[in-house]
Every structure is written in structure tokens, then in C-alpha cells.
Image 1 (cartoon, rainbow, N blue to C red):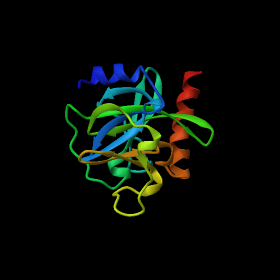
Image 2: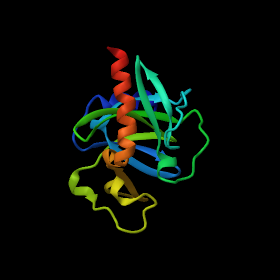
Image 3: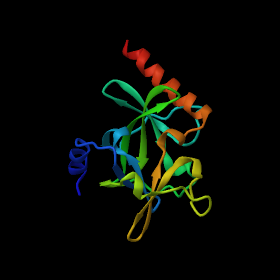
Image 4: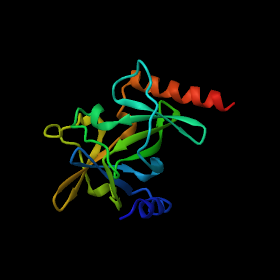
Length: 174
């Protein structure tokens, strides 16, 4: 499935739809309701004195958007970026504030429908990712797809950093 086809599928958003992507050979998913767009991985501007998982920022139509490297955040293997590496631009409600950020993924896979009744509870052991980041696990033929609770990926201090980057962007727009 091409990137363009995936973006077109995002236009028909339903509650149960999730975008699946690959990150360090793990299949993860996020609800399409949080996704604004998917862009190709490109040049990022590095920011001084931010956590190492904040890979940098991009200028997205005049707005400063912080880019999170989930592999670094989750202590997974960082693969070398290639033509399939993408940035998923997401809008997330964090502490009653709408924050726009991007997440770097190795490759976008597809949009799938996962009804809530097919989502297994988060296991307490066995996942490579801390369980507070995980909304649940969706069964598939060859294992599971980890469904992220993207609003829980960042700690309170990290949320503050990303939120301040977002506020600076909004202030520059005025």
C-alpha cells in the first residue's frame, strides 16, 4: 500500500480505525483520530538541551512541530532512516491542551479496523515497552499489534518541554 493510499484512507476516519506502523521490527498502532498527516522523513532542526528522544523540530507550514523518536524513547534499536522512514504528525490532548507533534517510524503499514472488543488488556510482563504507554494489544495471525496510548508516551516533564515548543510556535504565528 502506498503512502498516498494510506493518507486517503485516513480521510474516512472512524472510531475503531488505527494506523499501523513498524518500529524496530515491532508492529504498533495509533488511532487515526489523532493523526493529522504523514510526511516523509527529512531534515530536522536539532534543539539544544532537550531529551535525546526529541530528535528535533520541523517547520510545518509555519508551525514549529517537535519530532519524537519513539525508538529512542522506548529504548528500542534505532534503525537507519531510509526511503520508507516517515513522520506521523499527530494532535494529542495532553493535560487539557491540544499538542501537535510528530513521531518517527520505520515504515507506515496500513489502516486497519480494530473494534474495542478485539483489544486485549495490556500485559504486565513480556512487552518491550513500558505498559503505561500501551492502550492494549490487538490479536493478529502472526502475533499481536501493540496499540499505543500516545498521550501517555511522554512524562509530565517531557509534556512540558513539547508543550512549550508548541506555545513558542503559536506565539511566532501571532
